[in-house]
Structures are given as C-alpha cells and as structure tokens.
Image 1: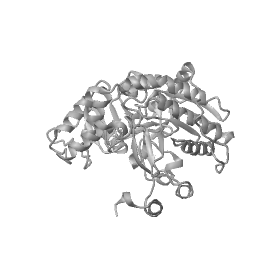
Image 2 (image 1 turned 45 degrees about the vertical axis):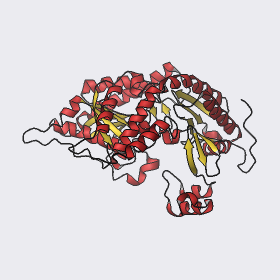
Image 3 (image 1 turned 180 degrees about the horizontal axis):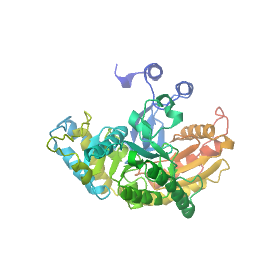
Length: 459
C-alpha cells in the first residue's frame, strides 16, 4: 500500500504513534483537530479533503515564491537526472560554482566567499566557528564569545542556542552551552513612530556599546537578526541600530554577523535587510527562502579579508575543518539558482513594493480591535500584539484556530499574530488573507464549538 492510499484515520493514528513534531505541545496537538496538508500550489495549501487554505506564513518563512513554483520544480527534476550528489571537499561542480558567484553578486558589498551549509542553524554554526577561528588564525587568543540580542533566535543546535538562549525554550540546556553577552533588543513595543523608534534604537545601542567596552578582549563579534527578530515575536526595529552597530564593530575591529536566514531575499523591502540600512556585515547567514522553500540549503558568506586568514602558511594549518555531507549539493544548488532566476525575471521586488502599503494598511485596520495592543509592518511582514489583559497568548491561539477554520493558516508567537505571505502574493490574495484575519479577531472570543458564519462579507 502506498502512503497516498492510506486511509485518513489510519494516517492520523500513525502520526500520533510515530511522528515527533517540532515546537509542538504533544498533549495539545493530540487534543486539537488534526491537520494534514497533502499538496500545495501558489499561496494555497490543500488538506486531505481538498480544502484550500491560504498560507499566511510562507510555511515557516521559506516559501518565498509560492508553493510548487514551476521554474524551481523543473530545475530539481532536470538536475536529479544528471547528478544527484557531489562533495565539495577538494573538488567542485558547476552548479555550486555558479551559485556562489551569483550570491556574491547580489549580497551586500564586500561579501565574496560563499560557504554552503544545510539549514539555518548549520549556517549559524559555521559563522560562529569562522569568526572564532578568524581571530585564532590572526594569532589573537581569548576572543571566543559573542554579543547577541535579548531573545534573539539563530537556530537550535547547541552553539546557536548559546547565542540565542531563550529560557522558555532552552532551560534544559543551560549547563551545556556557552552563552553570549546579551544586549537589550532595540524593538519598541508600540505602533510605528520613526522618531520614537530611532530613539529606542539609540538607547539600546548605548547598552550594547557598554558591553563591548567591558568585555572586548573576549568578544569575537556581534550577531543579530537585521530589522526583524522573528522568533522573539516579530520584533521590528529601526535601521539606525544596524548603522550604529556597524560603526562600533569597525571602530573596535569586531566582526558583525548578520543572520538573514529568515528575512533575506526581499522580505523587508530590500533584497537583504542590511541593504535597507545601507550597511554590509562581515558574515552574512542566509537560508530558508534560498531554494524557494523546496529543499534545505543555507550559506555563510564572508569577506575576502576573513577568507584569506584561512590560507595555510609553512608550519601553520589554518584549514577550516567544518563541512556537511550535503553542502552545495547539485540538486539543492539547481533549486537555488532557479529561485534566483525567478526572483529577478518575475519582478518579485516590484510585487513586494506594491504589496507593502497594502499590508501596512491592513495591519493598521486590524489594530482597531480592542484586543490589539500595537501593530507594526515592514516590507511583507505585518504583526499585531494582543493585550495581556484580554488573554494574550491564549487568545492568539484561538484567533489562529478561527483563521484556519476560515481558510487562513497562521501561527501565533506568544501574544503576537502576524502575516508573512509569499512574496508573489497578489493583491486579491493578500486582501483575502486580511479579511480572514480581521474576521478571526472578531470571532476569536466565541466558543470554539459555536458554528462559524461565513467570512466572505466583502470587507
């Protein structure tokens, strides 16, 4: 019997018996209505009954060009029949070379050397190890720590957890990781106000500056998520903060690592969030959207100055002993190249520019509800935070469930609800997402057992 032929009830039973779901409360999952998506196309996910659901979060922020993009699907099929795997240790293959050159051409200035990894966390790990070994290769000892932002998230490997330690998630690993020096986040928990947001960024930077001054001899670099701290609750902040941190790193000779795994490739309104702020990091981490959400692939891209410190000298082995079996895999490279070709050829950035004001206006409309504390938006990221006194995180879960019943897939982050749609979302599709979101907030406090009226009321 093929998997497609398994009866739904049997599949659900097998799911509960064998599959371990990430970031999932096991008891809550088994008690909730069972959700199983079977196929996807464009901005829609389809469950086993054929019901179409709008993908409001681009499936964990990865499906930038929509599901089943024909150019990417065809590239994967074609390459699978030519060469499926080739290692990059002491050899190469054409697709990895072309992809590295392409990325060097579109990333912020000065980033010329592309180190491929598997997923976001492995790109973060590579970046941390590169930064530490950079200082070691230069003969500087003791620079093995990092400064990171409070509740920043950089992946779930132990090294990444150390620089993004969130007690609610990572308490069991407290004694197993090397923690970063933690600087306050530059995010202001209020509606957007450019002057106030800038002042908040400047104040947060002053605290980071003090940490660097006190611990400089231990610090290899600063790592942050540019403009949007995603897992912390879509914390959007002013680009002035990035400019100040870049200036500080230049003045102190520290490395700046920009984790754009979530926000890279057009999400913030620039091709990269660093572009919006007009800065270039020393190391750029990318992933998620890199293959259009089809296959796992990531990269850490560094400057020529960093790369050259890894050249061996007589009596000194400076080789970077790090590597993943599937790094730069031919099929994933083909998918990434097809994504980049489509990104340019299909005017994705123009669509982002068109949809940005529509999303901003829509989030502002959602903020009229009494349950909403504040809202913010940037590019094709829009968020609302709910007031703690009206239920906060519990209400957010109920609203997300109501949205799903209506036909919109979103996931709450604590008391925050957000839209992060594919970059190719049309005006009509985004309008429908906003209608469902609005209606879900209205009806989020109704008993879940109460029948849900239609939301197709034209608003």
